[in-house]
Amino acid sequence: MELAASVSHGHGSSSFLHGSAKPKLNSASALFTGAPLSLSPSSTGRQARCPNKLVVHAKRISGLEEAMRIRRERELQTTTKFRKRPPLRRGRVSPRLPVPDHIPKPPYVSSTSLPDLSPEYQIHDSESIAKMRAACELAARVLDAAGKLVRPSVTTNEIDKAVHQMIIEAGAYPSPLGYGGFPKSVCTSVNECMCHGIPDSRQLQDGDIINIDVTVYLNGYHGDTSKTFLCGNVSDGLKRLVKVTEECLEKGIAVCKDGASFKKIGKRISEHAEKYGFGVVERFVGHGVGKVFHSEPIIYHNRK
Image (cartoon, rainbow, N blue to C red; front, side, top):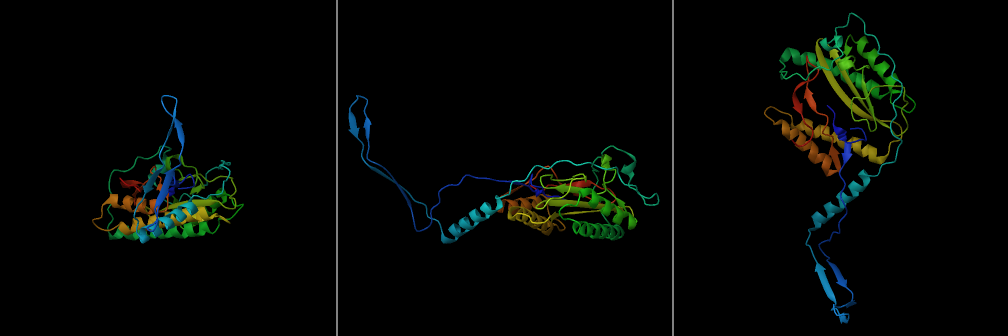
């Protein structure tokens, strides 16, 4: 699922790793420092002359290593330049939207309690994989349509209404609606809201980023997906945050195959994020999905 970005950040889904700058030397130079000639009082009150001292610090660095260091420093400088924005303020949350009676609903809808994470691994056969594919394809289409609505002045509540209508018209149920009392049909996480944001009356602003998390319940199976979209003229720093987070997702997916260890997924994600000066949000995880919305295995996005 999400990555924090993590990402990251309050900025959305991510956080940053900062380090103090230290002097570096290239392969053709050394740093020379000398203490000037000076007079200092002795213990007897008389002055003694201190000899001039020359201290030489030298470190051999290959040309490639030095070039990579310079490149990395430039990338980090680009990553950390963010335009200061006002903090996110909660808007008015409108009542939940109705779902026609003929649409099948997941079992948790009848309760306001947050369901426990299912301890069972959901192993899919060919029939369930076909149903999963149908649910995921619908979720992807809805997500793509929702992303096209992202622009300044649009409210996340408007996005929720559009997503809700698209899902029920397809004969599916919007999985977030009623999950542990969640009042909306989609999660919209703007800027420093990392995950599971509740749509409200706040208008999107030029320069915002927004993660839209769409899950549908179709023919007894959940299809779960999300993506972060840019709203208007977004700063280079935030564009880089979103780009690196998407690359982390691809790195994690590339690990997945029969026999691969779960911990390798988080390792690959962490390595790529850290390479560009980002950290990984450890609070949120990936999970199994199928007939049950959230189940084992839990997939950490950080080193574990």
